[in-house]
Length: 114
Image 1 (spheres, rainbow, N blue to C red):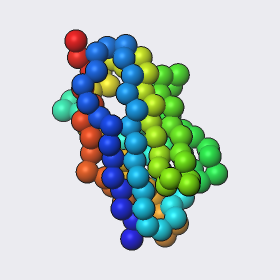
Image 2 (cartoon, helix red, strand yellow):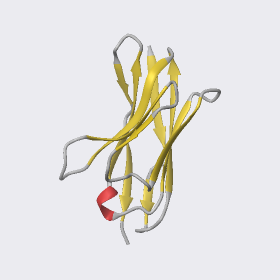
Image 3 (cartoon, rainbow, N blue to C red):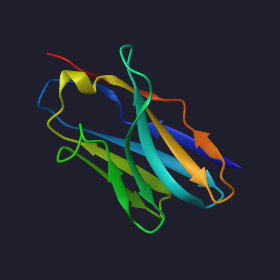
């Protein structure tokens, strides 16, 4: 069983930064990442990182967001810089296991507003 717990959301002004953290406990997973969902859009992939360190980003966040992981702490991070109002959403951490199961966190709200 895999447990996923996010933290680090909040309110930030446009141009500001936030760092989201996600603690993933339980079985070893092959891919970890972040999705987001706003009132206007369906849930979309923001970024993901494989156990080997390969990363993928949505076009809309390239150059602004960075995903990283710390295997010792079993934590994946999403550093978000140059935030825009359109980044406002609930951000969900997920973990994809080697048995092809997906595990999701409860979500954390990110609001970008002046």
